[in-house]
Length: 326
Image 1: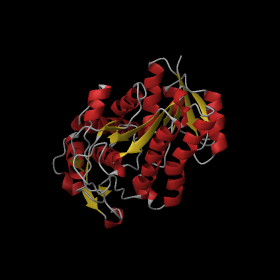
Image 2: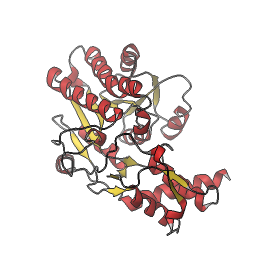
Image 3: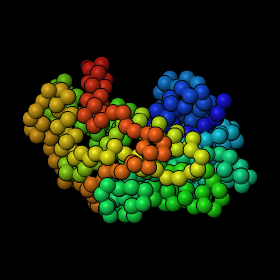
Image 4: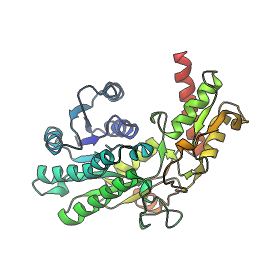
């Protein structure tokens, strides 16, 4: 039975990945920070076979302890402070967790394996936010990075540390440069859930409008469950490398609003949307769209859910959840 350790187990991707690995016969260990994380019970309900271990990406000894307990064949580092907007307000913490945390985990694996890093396969959750002020469109593995947020800068550090440990210590280490991926499990602070939940509540008469910032920014949005499948495929390859994972189609925030309101039969969405300058980012990333040719050709991966299906799925889920709360 293969064994896998997942950091960030309580996040959207962590839960989907745990479900996928459990279905493939893995013994799954999920790393959680703190003793009273309320999301842990949700993970345990969805993946009953999972074992939760304590660990913190800011604390090397705890990472060594987690590795000793899990004895993993594969490690998936999904742990991060992942809300881009928050990273300006907590830049130092973002750097410590999202950036230096990758170094700590790689170093923990090096110590745990006694310098035989190749026997534990490592996945790093890199991000399209590393491209930032894009140098070319679409973005591919060879596109230079130009991050535009503390989050993007931290992810870039973690990405290059992963490459460095692969080249310096022979680590089987892959980075998945994932473009935006969403689901009904996405946190409420993210714009997709802010919109889909807001639309559901407007349709049910529970709120009057949705307050947003920039409506013109374009993102390549896919379905999170598709993207964790790409993570697993990366670690099954004979040689480690980095992959862009994306749908190849970009949509604006306005497109998101159109699709979400259409899912509940509302055409005149503009009367329900308020723009607030306070929600504008200090440095905006205008247009992210990925070229996932390598992942499609080498991993045999392709998305199964398109943009409209994804948004409809999320709106329906939020409609059901909000109806229950009434």
